[in-house]
Length: 452
Image (tube, rainbow, N blue to C red; front, top):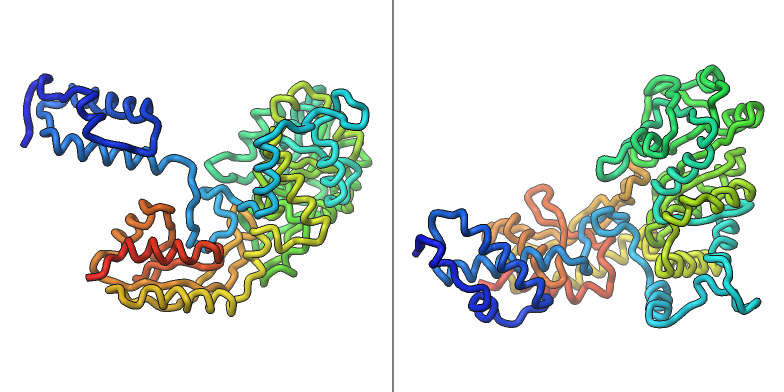
């Protein structure tokens, strides 16, 4: 039943009491109720109290799902940008808990008993794993690139870049826009598919400061293509006294082809050995750490970047630095399987199949055809776009409820579960589901597909 007139709108307190206890703060619930009621003032008819109460609960549920919370990732995409990219391991979680609950020596020199430099230990280890003279870190890779460009184009604004490397990254951000935001002026050379060393040489002028290379980490080109080797560009840059910078994007530290049947991703060490002056890359991609922008290369350039006033605006906090520090410690201690993203790449299909079969035993009495299927996992995060990793899935075939309804129920579950629909089946790729989540996954599936 619907009512008319503003008097039909119930009091905020009445609705608040009727909604009962929730797991959200009272001011948050109050704000939502007031917002929903304010929207009703422009309506010709007002729902009855019970319908209005149901509307409030639905709005509250929608708001609750927007909180950052753990998600069971059944998509098979390891570095899923929408899911926070690289998950952090147990060792990182322990170190974060310890630092978060205590004071710490973030900028205190325990040797001298006075103020010290931030992240000295971390920067030492970053340089070590990158094979660089020095390294530092800011809050993401885009920030790293902006910092580099702002510093080196302060007096000479021109940056040379191949048209074949003017890429767009996630969220609609484009490399040209990032470059222009730094105040740099672009000199685009070559064509989309072919750029020669002479193209770079012809573009160099008195206003040129940098030659920038951007690794095509989120797409690939084939066929009638050409680009000069990094060593050749480095030789040209040295001869013309220009700074050569490469944005590697994904930043693999170890040979990726040894982890899984995937292609090789250039490492910072390899790139610097080719004569590049500075590299930058993300901390939360193939490194498997937190969101961060890592810059490595020649010591005098790193020192100059850290002296920039803008550097302070981009620096990382104690938790990011701790997470990155612990991740690098795992690499240096030879404990790469403790980095979850790398461990997922190395999982065998035999291991995944055993887990899938155990899960199926928990679903036998449900009105659904559940089976072990084949998956095609991906690295994700704009990384290794040509690499498909054979994987194992739980496949659900059913008519009532429909697949889309089941997918929606799973997204609204606690914890939320996200899979994908392919070939008329709802699929959950176990490569990106942690073994410790198997019991929860079975429970959530049983709740989403009630027995008839």
